[in-house]
Image (tube, rainbow, N blue to C red; front, side):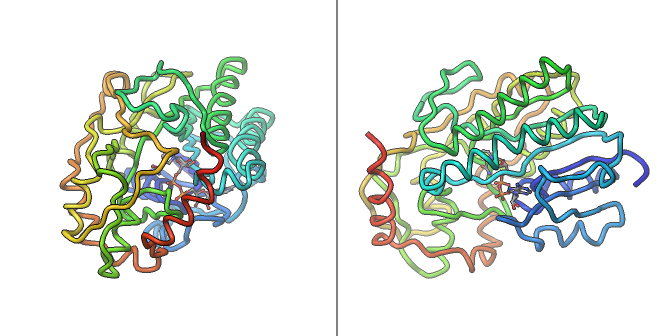
Length: 330
Ligand SMILES: NC(=O)c1ccc[n+]([C@@H]2O[C@H](COP(=O)([O-])OP(=O)(O)OC[C@H]3O[C@@H](n4cnc5c(N)ncnc54)[C@H](O)[C@@H]3O)[C@@H](O)[C@H]2O)c1
């Protein structure tokens, strides 16, 4: 591959595939890596038509020196497995995939003297635990489950490698990203996917508690733009929160999808609200979110057929699922 080449791990996933499309539009050559454990090759249908795109179907920790150029422009590390409840059931799998393999990947880059201008790690706001107020990057870390732990160790490893080996790395803690190609794996996955699938089955949306819980939703085009501007910025070895900074209630979300809803009991284990303080990312990257929640949801609802094959969660199955795992929570 000639020209400026970027590497995207987790390329067949939700955010990774949008990042690939974004970079190709900007005329970069892109190498996408994904083992398809959770992503879908369908997410790369635009990219696969582009000659500047190369796909490696493999584990990112097993990339070989001869598969990538010695000089890479930007590396975006999205590969990871990400659900709260399965991580409680299989903590080692999560730690291996999200934390240890990230270290292996950093070592691969370092030992093979792969040059890059920036490595951007996709971290998670789950490291702030149940904190429900406006959250800046210095808010106390409070790990509640193995998923959050694995992502946090992955992030801290990136920053440690940045410090001691002088590598240009930053970490972006994503709050609640949403958009086309985004899917929900469990009843504790994002409620947007749960609601869309319910709407498709004419099943009343299951609002837990009073519905005043808030989530800081950030639309996918704003997410990839922030990652790109972060890669281009001069900043290294720093952490950034990424959200839209204006949380919306679950009641508001449900109204944008359907008028039919039912209330189910409030459940433990999730923050009541997520609210990113985004001053730092706005200032350092000269970035700001452009897509309002109403506009983003309109796009989603117009493409609701995408959620046809998602699992349908009913009040009964949610109750069972919740009971099975809230036993781990005080
Ligand atoms: N979506 C969000 O709101 C959000 C919030 C916080 C953090 N994140 C982080 O951002 C990243 C991307 O999230 P997403 O929503 O696109 O998830 P996703 O599941 O849609 O995409 C992740 C991709 O990584 C791939 N993958 C996993 N392990 C791999 C491995 N060992 N080798 C190669 N490929 C592997 C999966 O097959 C999948 O395609 C994840 O690391 C996630 O933890 C996402």
